[in-house]
Length: 173
Image (cartoon, rainbow, N blue to C red; front, side, top):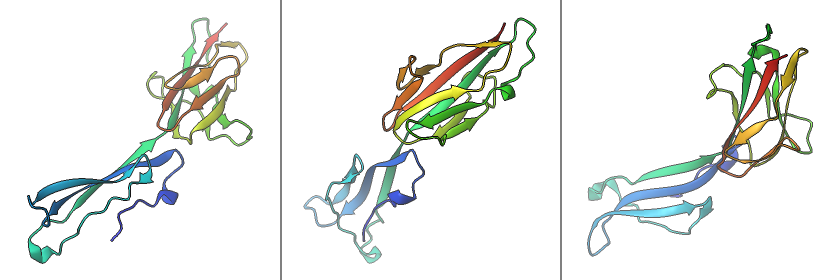
């Protein structure tokens, strides 16, 4: 038998990290439960373990597959303190891979809650952040936590496993 994850079927932004199995070793001089790491950092360790028939009374092995997710959350902060009437739906937020014209995230922030934003799984890489601004509103620079960000270029760089939260504020003038 082979224990593995079909990594080609994982969504963008999700990668294999580890596969760890626990089994009963009947061959050991001290029989008992053992743990073996089959994959670490997404690569096979070459480790193996014996699989015993159920007639031996040994329990079936159990394996835990751990994946790493990379995500980007775009958050809109909207201030209407000078008579502005725009809503979150007035501003489209976009994250586009550097060198591409096809965004990986594009839409509106679904909630005024600063923790909730337009969120998606993305692959590691560089993303240019943009938004559609509205007349009568000033826009701040984007700010990001959880990843490397350049305010000068508006590019956020995510490494595998990072989860960035990027925000932009629009204030009526």
